[in-house]
Length: 147
Image (cartoon, rainbow, N blue to C red; front, side, top):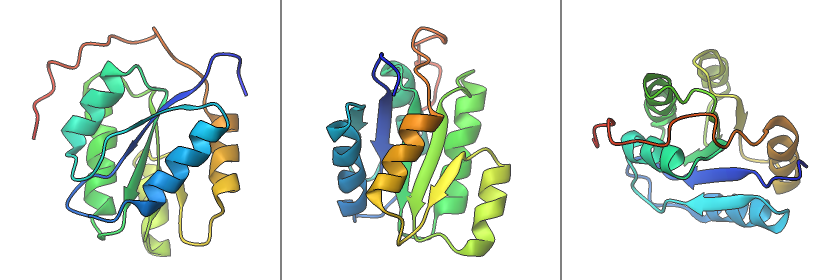
């Protein structure tokens, strides 16, 4: 793990009200020294991207169990590109059918973790694939339109 702690926003986009998995991942990341910002439930993609930019995050971890992963994950990636913050790595987890994994990876989601993935596997991926990016991008998220 790099000497400067990673900073990761863990978010629950959409109307999904089940956040146990997101909290388990947030705690596991925190326990290995990652700075975690948990947004809470029912966040819009715009709110998540604004939080990540304001918090100068290195990554965003999304959790979706509602089946809206194709729309929500894609919108987060697109908003990051529009905000010139595509260096923020997006990863996600939840109930994601195998057929949806390749299209999401092609759209810019860096990794997907489905049921049965251990927390250790997620922690190892985050701590080996992400690098601190702080100060490399503007921190002004006011141009984003909250949806």
